[in-house]
Amino acid sequence: MRGAILIDTDRCKGCALCIAACPLGLLKVAERKVNRKGYPYVVQQDEERCTGCTACGVVCPDGCITIYRTKTDNP
Image (cartoon, rainbow, N blue to C red):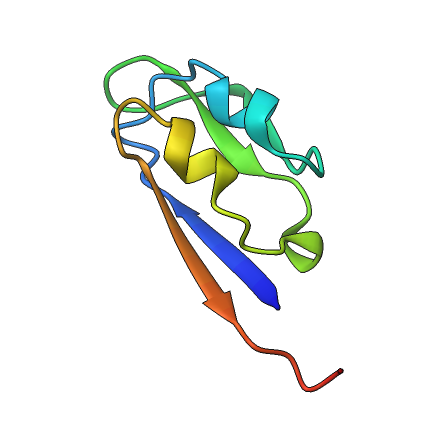
């Protein structure tokens, strides 16, 4: 199973709960970037390693993260 996440950066407040929840450590706060509301937001570091486990989306208090899961051809 392979996953992908979509982060609504305009709604993200950079609370970092998703960063702590990601078992693979694939998220980080964007360096020197803020959204329209002035908050630093979270970005995905390594899109290829995401498994779609949903941990980040479950803990996001603002519902900023959408998770997509796809099957891979490899058994």
